[in-house]
Image (cartoon, rainbow, N blue to C red; front, side):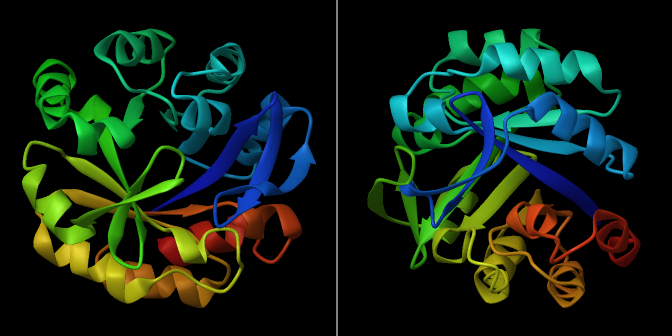
Length: 235
């Protein structure tokens, strides 16, 4: 299992939100590129980037910083947040981003996901962000009637899902392992668990249910979890 340190970008800074609420923001660094270099130096093999401005506004807003990060490090990155058209997807992948994550658009325009996967295959992932088992969209501001499991099953061409339980995100209380397991059991694709990963026990739990990766954000920044320990536990 792979550990992916998260860098959430908002206003050019590295931040973290609690349960995705814009007003519940902690700024951890105003130098995201240095943060990316730090995680690489500490052993990260893959980085998870989120353009929070893009998620809220519906269009990518921190691509200049993403480009700087991609140029500065040697490990691959994935990026989500505000990628809602083929034009935006192509722009993101042209920067050298290894994998682009489609979220809101995947629910609203499943045909775009089919087109994206046909064109870019494994370089396209779908983010499933769920509140009480239902898929949320538009920077988590809206919740649909579609269940996360049903949605994952419908996205049969997708090779990688990122499953985030919104109520767990940024809370340092552990991921929703059962909900993540439900998605893993329903699809043949890789599923990366996200939201609330705080301890080595959380990583062990995600590994046990067959997650292909775990995204760790706030716990790395607060020091609750050391990246080297997380990587060792995942292996």
